[in-house]
Image (cartoon, rainbow, N blue to C red; front, top):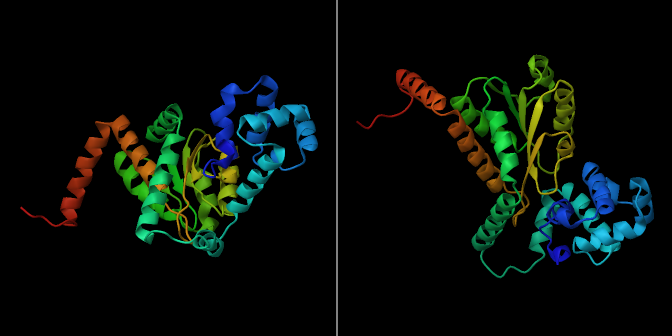
Length: 292
């Protein structure tokens, strides 16, 4: 049953079972996805009334998702909401309460492998290709930004994308300078943003500002989904839970590296020319050691 699969969010269950839903059930599903998870946190009567469907319609839909009934569905949404705000101490308590049967190395390997499988199995190839095309278009300036932890991912992405294509800018970690970058953003430009739990308010405010300027937004987030997802043109959910007080960046990095490779291929042979010119510049600085 889907409801017993703790790794699947309600959002993903809806997308998985969407083709089997009736028109009225899809009306509720769409309303929930548009205002997730808030639209499903009230009683079944209120939730149904807010959307304009009957309570039996809501009850039938949640059962199609694999839940025994609305109370179980409601609890699943509450657990997701709670998980979004969990800090390092509680994360550690969540996994350390279970008696370990294997070495931490093995548990980490198992968790990371699971995260990778979940992440890549939930990616729609068409959406991936569309996002790749958006990032590869050198006629559109590309901006990158991350949060307290994910700024490292933004820096990694900048190093590679800047070598592949012109017109790439990484925003500094100081949000006080961000309006200076927004000032130069034009309609059609792209913002690649990384935001995982506990989701940073300054990143959300930045997204709201650039959205008003017609900037396209590509979001990398976790399985629960940053609030920025409601504003993003492309959202990619990466599974992050590991036996630690911290979340893992492995699946996010793997997806990012895949997208970097895809952008490189779309821009070949222009990317090759940039690589060669960049190597010439490095040779002039004697930055790398020569072994011949």
